[in-house]
Length: 323
Length: 183
Image (cartoon, rainbow over all chains, first blue to last red; front, side, top):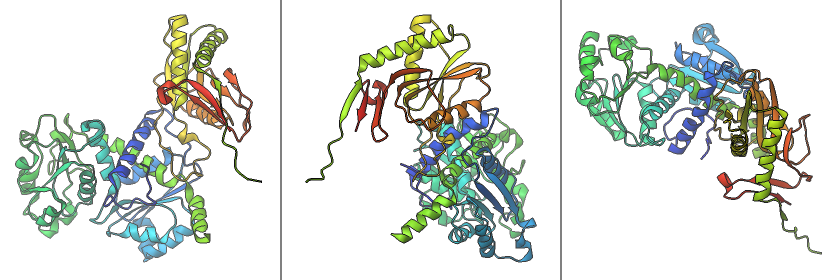
């Protein structure tokens, strides 16, 4: 099975075989970052644009390093320094970028669906680096890769119990992971206060828990989510202190977990709120593995999506139109 | 007149014994040229080069009682024709588990044809360090070079036309050891 997508906009509907192909391809890219010379010539002469309308350190840097290790030229555009400040619409920005003939565009945007709009406007491949409360597919792929490396049996994560804990309602990381984990056969439970974990999530066919210790008991993997403090004015829970007491993962709560459990967190962490430093820096924490694997996953995706370059894609479109 | 295409002719140009003898001879030639096994290492090009490198290593171990360092190179990321294909080729990874600096590296592949694969393999190796030199061993040299590259050790020189296909088949992958020429 190969990877047949033109873009990576989300994991919803992506067949398990294609997800596994990305994860298999990722394996070969881990080694490149361990070399003294961390560069291969695969995307030489190709241009990759990082279009970020939202703050990001990890994801933007990870994409930029991934593109550079493949020898692509990278351009970073952030909302604070772009024409969006002057009122340009995303569609107009897309048309202008398209006129500069990039070979891939990576977009993060506060509005759900923005990457889809961009993908319709440009002929280069588009990778979603997080859109609103919708999806963050590369984060989920790096999480799947990390889980598979540490907990997979013969490359399969089917049957693994994965608890996703925290602000499920607002989390694009949770949504992408739900699609990916379910596609690969993992058993998912969602854990959080009722205000951040509405009953509608039952439609995914997963267990819901409003008690942290019950939710993580017997889990092979605990995936903690960031409390989005910027939403604090919205009264989803009484106080950070109370949230931390009920849903913060600290050593006391870990007593309910399996001794060989592994812990993931997409970052940035609120130490002392959703996760204690002792747990975040502890032996079962894979948080820094996730960051390392993130570069490899993004290299794999750029290899799969951007290597052929826009000239080849345009030739194909012309050939199809002519026939 | 019928315009029926003649069925492709398949000729066995090396049988299992010939393959075995070629590997033994190449092992001796490598040892002779390098005056032993000091700072010597073998790197097979995926896929068939890896198995041929293993066999050369076994032959050298039988002669010199020395186990040579072995590596694997996947040239996919270094290819010059990546943007042409329909789908991206599967990558299976490069493994160089020894320091390449100052080593004499024998690159091993099944068929030497245009030389583009070898160019890519050399570029890949150079990204790991600066070897003392790089040598090339192949089971078959079929000609038609497009780059200034030649092999140091050759199992068989096989004159071909560009329309023909050369297949080196190995027990590990194909269940049989031989070399066939098609077309």
